[in-house]
Length: 118
Image (cartoon, rainbow, N blue to C red; front, top):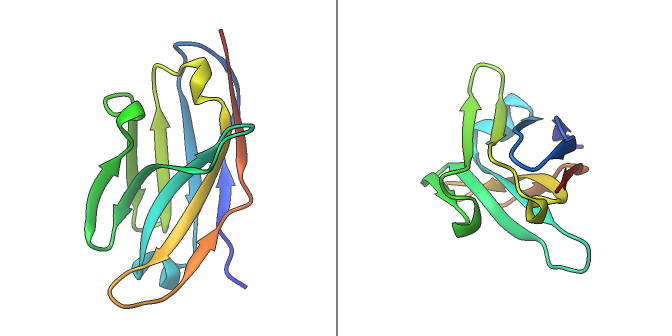
């Protein structure tokens, strides 16, 4: 069973920063586009940022300039650095590994809660 292990969520105030981490197996990491999604209460899950595979980096408009997605290839880990957090960033954040280069898989982490108070 593929595991994506997330960490780094929490409760912060508006303007603060958080860094989310997601560790995957080496094989999955090497053949995937890695992404972060989020789902706020009563809303659909949305793409926040993605990297890898045929994608250099891609961000939702709402987070451009504030969030940065990056990887540590030696540790098979993807990060989401979130700066200047806003209350509307409050959501459960999910790590995703989507198959790249013809690979057909779509794996999800368990989710980590990010709460931003005003």
